[in-house]
Image (cartoon, rainbow, N blue to C red; front, side, top):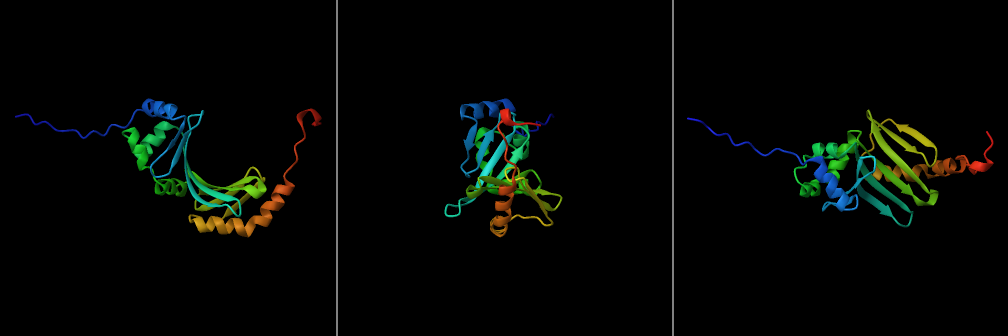
Length: 176
């Protein structure tokens, strides 16, 4: 007697299907969990979730997770259908951040600069290309209030960094 074994459908969504879904959505998708997914021209996918916005101080803080490509997004989250994108939550992005596959970005309007926090081997790297700023903190920052406090306590350092950033001359005036 032959027994039939039912195989559970574990097939993941083909990348080309999700790629087409992004194209139809204008390369941006907002999930039911308020996670924003963006497919870049390079193929990289960035997931963003707002953490806080202080209009009075002009500071917004977002949690971002990066994926090398659509295939990685599908694999990490076990996406089997486009509707599964709605299962991606802020908690998922925190896990990516804590694993070194994401970052927290603070947009500081007063300084016209973005400040980023990224975990590397139990160290929080704080950096800003806009301010030519870099610092390593010997503990993992993982709570919204830690980022807010760090920004408040170091705002004077950031202001100095902005003042010290090199002024670029127009190309035609640049003399090496």
